[in-house]
Length: 114
Length: 109
Image (cartoon, rainbow over all chains, first blue to last red; front, side):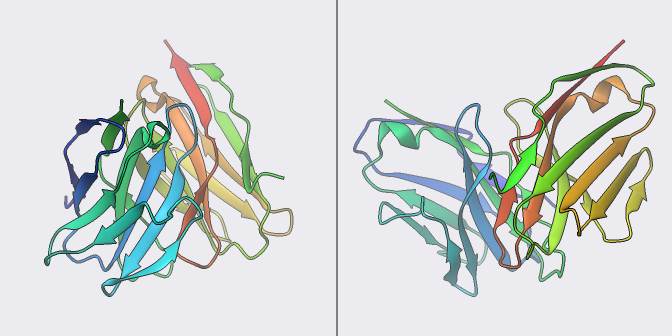
């Protein structure tokens, strides 16, 4: 069964450093997303991406964040100048061009900012 | 009012029991509805989409009441492996999913 994959599974970084989280969406999916989940809190939407551009973003997704699809398979989330409060689980998801928008999530990257 | 509201639980039930979770959503423009399950420190996994007429998938039945902005999930014949957090999720017509905080289920032997 096709699945979304993410690397690394755990990233530890120092405050102020830049991190890049990587995702490989399901191959025939056209919509890609990033969500985050702070420990003990609910899953929150960050950004959606379609046709090589951002289609929607939340208030959380400020200038510190950027997304890119550098090639035909990878989808990345870059966080510049990380802050302590960026520590969270970051999930990538993808969906087909489906009316019901069923999104399938990757296993996540746990980001720890020290 | 929270966009998607769920009772956090935990619901502690014996194996074989029937358990029901409810969820309310605030945005009447919401168009798609889902139940996901999330195991501890894992990703949300799609359990089922929820259709207007209600739908069933094995032991799981989902219902939607648009007038009351209410979604439910019924699990029959609970298994130990059903222990997880169940997330009520809505989509308001744009592509972002809005998650509830989840209801924790613990099935006991």
